[in-house]
Length: 141
Image 1 (cartoon, rainbow, N blue to C red):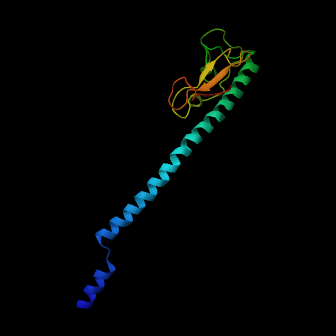
Image 2: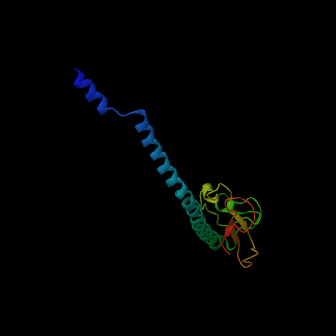
C-alpha cells in the first residue's frame, strides 16, 4: 500500500509547477498581444484607404447617375438615403449601406464638395484614431 501512495504523489503536479506553467503562458500571450496591437492600427489604416477608394467610386457612380456629386450639405448620406436638401437628384438609387460611412474608429468619414485639395471634385477623409483634424487624418489627397 505504501508503494501506491508514493506512486500517486509522484504522478501529481504541485501548485508551484502549475503556477509556473500558467505564468509562462501569460507572459507568452502578453508578448503576442503587444505585437498584435501595432498590426491592428496598420490594419485599420489600410481599411480606411480601401473604404475611401470604395466611397470615391460610389460618389463617381452617383455623379454619373445624377450629373453632379452630392453637395457638402447632402454629404455621404446621399449614397444611403435620398437627399432632402436641394439639389434633389433625378435618378437617385441606394449605393451603400449606412455602416459603410463609418471609419474603423467609429467616426464618420468627412466629405467636402468642392474640395480644398480637389476643387474640381471632392475631398474625402477619415479623422483617424484620435477623431480630430490634424496630421493623422487619412484622405484622398
